[in-house]
Structure formats: C-alpha cells, structure tokens
Amino acid sequence: MAFFSKPKYSTVTVKKKDMPQGLWRKCPLSGEIIYTKELEQNQNVVPKSGYHFPIAAPDRIRFLVDPDSFEEFDAGLEPVDPLGFKDLVPYTERVAKYQQASGQKEAVICGLAKIHAIPVSLAVMDFRFGAGSMGSVVGEKITRAIERAIERKCSCIIFSASGGARMQEGILSLMQMAKTSAALARLARARLPYISVLTHPTTGGVTASFATLGDVILAEPGALIGFAGPRVIKEATNRDLPEGFQSSEFFLEHGLVDQIVSRLEMRDRIAALLRLLQTGAPGAGRAAG
Amino acid sequence: MDSNLYILEFEKPLRELSSQLQSLQRSAQENQLDLSADIASIEAKLVATKRQIYSSLSAWQRVQLARHPRRPYSLDYIRALFTGFEQLHGDRLFRDDPSIVGGPALFDGRPVMLIAQQKGRNTKENLLRNFGMPNPEGYRKALRLMKMADKFGLPVICLVDTPGAFPGIGAEERHVAEAIAVNLREMASFGVPQISVVIGEGGSGGALGIAVTDRVYILENAYYSVISPESCSAILWKDKNSAAQAATALRLGDQEMLKRFGIVDGVVPEPLGGAHNDPEEAAANLRTVLSAALKDLSRLSPDELRDARYQRFRALGAFEAPPQTPAAAPSTETVQKNSGNSVPATT
Image (cartoon, rainbow over all chains, first blue to last red; front, side):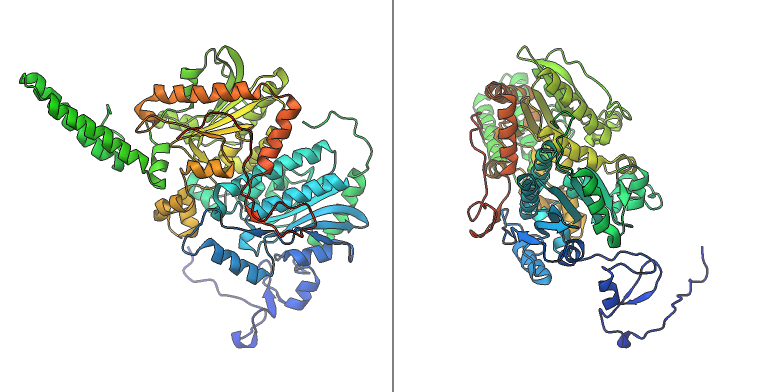
C-alpha cells in the first residue's frame, strides 16, 4: 500500500478557466491533450495513441460511406410509452430529453448507402440517445434495414453501440431481440453477407441478438463488449475480473470477434470484405434453416 | 398448507385462518362438540380471503409467487405430464449444463422434444442447477436438441423458468450472448411445431433463448420481463430496495397486457393460491393448453410454421410511424397482436 499518494503528472498545465469546455479533450490512454477540432477531423480517434472516443451516428455515416450516397429510411419512427413507465422520471420525459440532446428521434439511423461503390443497407446505433438502448423503434428499424438488404439483394452492415434492451418499454424491448434475429435468419437464407461492427459499448440484449450474429464480426479497439456488465458479474461471482476482461481484444483472443479494426480503416476493410463475400454467385451449400 | 416454511407475507392471513380452522376441528373432535357452524364459517372466510388476496395481487406479489420455493419446477411438470423421458446431456462442445434439461419424451403417446430450465429445491440442488441460471452450454445443448427434433420431426416443448442467463466470467468467455443470439435466429427457422411456456420466472434474454416459438404461454402467477426487478431498481432508482416499484413499473405479472401486446397466446390458469397449492391441478391445466396447441400446430406444414412464426415475432413492438415514411409503414400506432390463435386462454 502506498504511503504517499501518487503525484499527478501532466505535461501541460492548463488552468480550468483557460480551457473552455469542449475545446480540448484528454486522451484516457496517453493523457495527451488534443484540440477537439483535430480530433473530430480524425473521426474522434486520438492520432498518436489510437484511442477511440465515441462518435455520433451521423458523423460515423459521413466518414464511412461514399459522399452523397446515404439515403436515410424510417427517420420518422418515434417511440411511444406502451407501459406508461415511470421511475424517478417518466419515460416520455426521458425520450423528449434524448431527442432534444441528439436531434434524432431514436437511437439508430438506417438507410441505403454505398461503400467504395458497393451498395449496402446500413444501420448505425447512437449511444448518445438513451445509452443506445433498444426499444421497439430500434428493433423495428434494424429489422427493416435487414429486410431492405434482402429486397435490394445487398449486404447488411450494422454498427452496434448499446447498453442493451430498453427497460422502459418492458417486455416489448425483449421481443426486439427475437424480431431482429428472425430477420437475420431470412438474410442468411438469401445468402447475403451481414457484417456486424461492435463499438464501445455493446452489451446486454443487443449483444445477445443481432450484434453477435454477423457472418463477420468486427470490433473497434478497446470497446467494452459483453452480455452482463462487469459490475453485475463481479457482484454475482464475487471474483475479481481478469485484466482486459470483456474488451474487443479479449473477445478476439476468445474467438468471438473476427478482427479488430480501427475506425480510420473501417471503410476500406468493410469494402474489402464485401468484395470477397458479396459475389452474387449462387451458393452451393444447403439452404440455411 | 402443510409447512410453516416459506410463507409469503401476503399469505399470512391465510395461514392464521387455516390454523384457526385446524384448532376448531381438533376441539370439536376432542370435546365431542358440534362446531360445524363455526367451522363452516371459517372455511367460507378462508375461501373468500384467498379469493380476495389472489384476485388483487400486486406486481411484486406475483414475482414472489413466481419465485415461490415450493412452486412446481420443470421436472415436476415433466413427471406429471410426460412419459418415457430420455434425458440427453451435453452440448458436444464443452460440458453438460444441468440448469437446462432436455430430451425426447412422450406426450399423449406422441414423441416430443423437451427443453426445460430447472431450478433446485435446496442448496445442494441449487448448486447443481446454478439456481436455474444457464451457462452458454445450456443454450447450445438446447439448440442441439432442437436441431435433432427438426431432423426427426418432433414438436418442441420448452419450459421457461430462469431468473436469467448466468452473469459469470466463464459465461462471457464462452460467449453466452452469442449462444442466445444463435438460438433466437435458429428457432425462427425450424420446421417443426414449437411451444414454450413460462412456468415461473421468465428472466430476460435467458428466457427468450428458448422461447422463440410458434406459441408462447405463461402461467397465471409467472412473470416475463426484459430485466429482473432488482436490476431495474438498481439502474433506474439507483438502489436495490425499489424492486417492488420496478416490478410495478415493468407491469410484471400483468398477463392481460402480455396477451394484448401479442407476447403470449394464452394464460394457463393456476389453482387458487398458486401452483404450489395444488401442483396436480396446475399440471392438468398445462396439459389442456399443450394438447390444444399441439393439435392446432400439427395441421401446419414446415413452411407455414416458419412463416407464421416469423410474422408472429415480426409484429411485436409499439411505435409511431408517420404515414409518409418511404418504406411501407404500419399505421400510426402499432401495438400489434398476432391473430389466429385458437387455444383456450383463461384468467
């Protein structure tokens, strides 16, 4: 046990008042202070350390797809309050707050796009909206994105970022897991590729449904991935968690994740995979299911 | 009630009345008195109180009943309703998970595949059964058995009774989320009739992992939830002591709501006072529902089953869609319910 507290080193001494909020960000890996504008231009990835800050769904789409190729679908779908749910705050108030803060109606943006000229049906979750939780709207929009891939005979790409199923919509949220997974069974039968990208964090009901059903599962570096959260596991098992437990790297080693891909390379890597998998040739294997 | 153990708080008035009744009966016998009028009045009061308590259970009381330590578990129903159960073990990958049991058995003389989550009745059993919380192996064993059922044309019957999948280190290392997800996808594809019944706790993804079936039923005092009331309380109320409020907010035990949302196709009635008060009657009620559902589903071809099952789950959800959405959108508010279920559903 240390008798002396560890001195806090910092390469730059900046007084709080000199640092308007949001202008600079500190890298949690290296401690480096970075100009926010520079960070945004680099897709919220710290250039030197490679640390991935979360990125809002519209920004991710902008960096990912060919310019002007994104056509959004189902943007108008809005949540309702099927249970009349109220905890410390009524659900309707929470939704209004999320919508105002994010400028979006829900926690996922879906549409058709092209990546290096390859057509895809894309769904990108946004953690800023209610911790990316999946209620009826998220489940419906993801399902429609999968069905759209089947209609258009293109690949489906889903970026996950979610705390899990949305408690405030109760059992209906749980059913979105079944709905999205059933749609993926149809996509598989149509022999169309599905690439699932796990970003920080992907947990709970999203992990236990479409996020882990990709033909290829990619993960951004350092993302928290899991079914149960680390705190819950610690409480349930009364054990210390292994180093790096539930990180992208942990799941690459344990065989769930195919590749860890930097956000800066995501676009090229997805295109490369699609060129290899989305051949349009009739499959020789037995029909899935 | 034959035991002093496990009396729930709201069951106490009944306990008092029945001990009054017993002492009256005893003194009538011992002293050769005719107390039949008193006895009859207490008996009537007992029934009335029971009816009153159990017709107005709170969400939390339902949860307590669903978790009642004397409630019949899967193997109790299996013993009562099935013959020739051949339990098959293991996922052929890692190990056997005793929190999910399964194998072929006969129901009304017809082979079916059973898959059932099993809790323990005492500490020793609970250690074996992991308190009914499956590891990934359990879901993979379930999938193996469902595939076998699909291959040999056996209907699948799943009994759901779990607080949730086990939140353990090994479970994460062996991808419990993926094991559940694969089941959700594969269950949507099978061509044999599938029925699931939530007999006690329907805890989240751990329950759904064996419940993407053509028909879903729930017992009167069981609950089906996206999250345990305790975890919900910890997250939304920031403490663990608001589980009862969380249960109310989640509307646990509100089986009418489940029917209205299309989550379940029917509610299996329980004897007055809960399944543990008369396990035989509870099993008989379950038999009626299973028989009718099996008969109904056997008329459908594999493709018809698959399509109807897809539509059943595809329709679940409640949201608002503007009429001008590019993709074909359902009308303004869709709290959709599947149609065509013709199995008796009572409460």
